[in-house]
Amino acid sequence: MKILCVCGLGQGTSLILRMNTETVLRQLGIQADVENTDVSSAKGEKPDFILTSNELAQTLEGHPSKIIIVNNYFDLEEIKTALQTHLN
Amino acid sequence: MEIIQWIATNIFGVPAILLGLIVLLGLLLQKKSTSQVITGTFKAMIGFLIISAGSSIITGALTVFEPMWAEVFGLESNTFSNYMGQEAFTTKYGAAVTLAMFIGFLINVLLARFTKFKYIYLTGHMMFWTTMVFAGVVVDTKTDIPFWGFVIFLSIIMGIYWTFQPAIVQPFMRKVTGNDNIALGHTSAFAAVLAALLGKWLGNKENDSEKIKMPKGLEFLRDSNVITALTMGLLFCVGAVILLIKGGTGAEKIIANSGDQNFIIYSIIQSFTFAAGIAVVLLGVKMFIGEMVPAFNGIATKLVPGAKPALDCPVVFPYAPNAVILGFLGAFAGALIWLVVLGYSVAYVFVPTMIVLFFHGATAGVFGNSTGGVRGALIGGFITATIVSWGQYIMVTFLIGSTIPDTAMWAADTDMFILSAFIKFLAQLFF
Image (cartoon, rainbow over all chains, first blue to last red; front, side, top):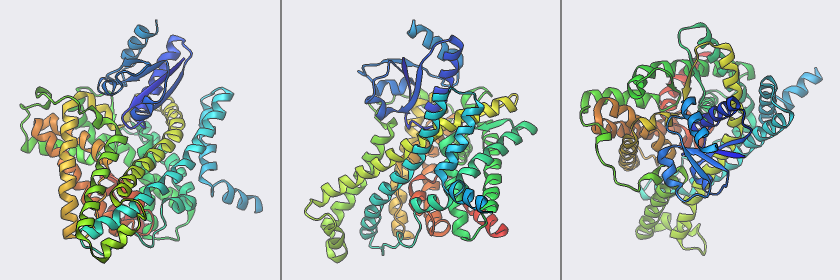
């Protein structure tokens, strides 16, 4: 399973989201390949899931991957709930 | 002695190798699997080498942009002469920059461990650019600096900056986020604080930006590739049209560079090349930062109980999405005004980098909105453009001209401009 974390520049924020997602996945005992990138590059990739903010999700409309919205990239509980809802 | 000399030349003298070793160490300490250790180390090294390649693409486009606008303003184009440039600078000083980043981070961790300032700076790409630009300022001040003196000097400055920048912003950050869990670790700090103060003084908190309805379809502004190409394309086209109308020997000489190609098409391609160069550099930075920051985070959380992460500026964006757009619009308007003013008053061609203007303007917008509503957000953006444009002029002309002005033109930003004169003063004092 491949998960892509996306922010506007693909540098700092999506990396934080990637680290937190990896932490949550470890807690849940799920194996996944997590990467981070910017919104332009994300359009050309086809991971199983994309994690991003509400605003950026709008620019990714029509993307073939399943898009999961996370508003607070630092809220491990929110990430956990979002992942559990969509992965099951 | 031969062995020491060999290590100095081939490890400490080759930034990619040194970085690879640091990342390798970090991954081993985190007890990662063999495949993760190998891929991580390789990605970090490749990423570092990509940065230099991308920088030369950007410089190529800038050497078209600068003479073009110099001719528009009727100036002698002389900014681009006699400087080292990012590629040569990295080859010579990249290892010192890499080490200073690493030791600077350890100083940040120690300060957080033993003082009441528990902030850990985790915005890796800004760590890289800030250290790089400050190194450029130091070498511009004095060229023959001993390697370790240079590394230690930079490390101490970076460690102090990374600890206290988040601390200074935190009272304002609490107002934005409503809690004390995260801090801002970003070089837009000075503009953000100023925006919050000015917003309080000149703005109207009651008229919160989140109460207004923003037109739909502005989401594309969040895509950094698009805004960079869009604005640079616009400026290249305007410059090209002015030159075509103006004529004269200077203009004809620049137009002749396009050869058989139409000059406007040539200019558009140059603007997209600029955006492409930035995309390449960002890919490189992402590849090595993506391996380094998790290792840093692992070290910090083990050593500093109650550590507060200082994070990249978009963490504040969800708290006021409209203020993000307003801040950017304020910064954009300011940049265009200052482009013209700087051209005619001090004969400097300002390169309005959209990444800096967007992210810093948007952050200042959110902070300005927290104290001064819509007006505060717009003022925040405008203040950002003011610091960035005048700061770029002062830095490129007086502080970094002989080393990496090409990098300063698009990657240097708010706090770097504010602090660089102080760095130069300290460098004169110590070396």
